[in-house]
Length: 116
Image 1 (tube, rainbow, N blue to C red):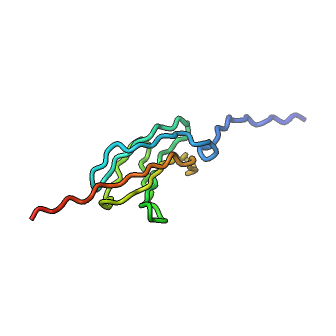
Image 2: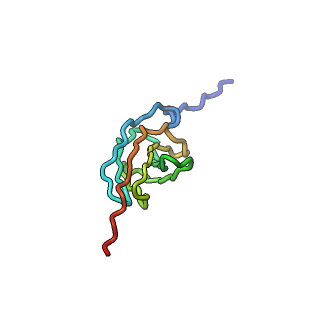
Image 3: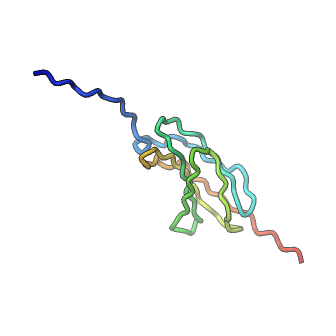
């Protein structure tokens, strides 16, 4: 009796098992109360999108912004004269995330005085 072997499919490593696969996240523009950031795209067939995490330098918690497949984003409603830390990670169709990118640290400009 002969049993047929099932066909084997090529399994690519998940994003979560890869080393940091994009190493550069940069600030493009700062204008209170928002900042524009961008990063190099991930070349992976199972890429489903990117998540940005950011928080103030004094904060333990963080905000997560899912930006889909875009490689740039605008972080909105930031506090004036505040230092923030941010990273981006890619995620696959299973929701597994890559290691985070480099951390960027930026400070928003002070609030403009109101005209009297």
